[in-house]
Length: 94
Image (cartoon, rainbow, N blue to C red; front, side, top):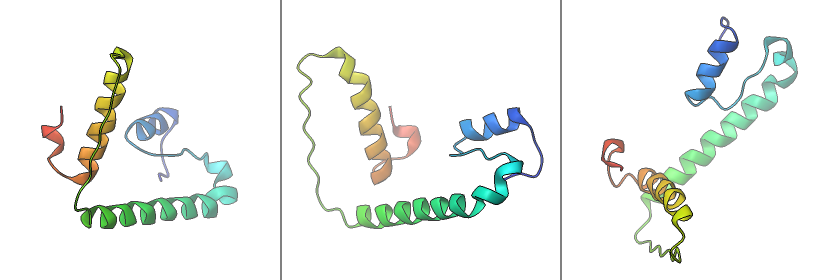
């Protein structure tokens, strides 16, 4: 949330991880629902981290059937899950 800025600032914020851009003129109409969404996402993230802390074992098996187009999406998927499990630091992800 910012009281200053322009379209360029909004684009930078979205690229940095902001999930939504709300023009100031629409803020009174959507502020409460947006805040509820943010709080819900935060609770979901907290619950997921707590659940992962209880994880004892997980097995994954992928059969790509020589489909090269699936290698990159699989790598991203595994990076996301390894990152969320905190098995290594972000700098150690390939």
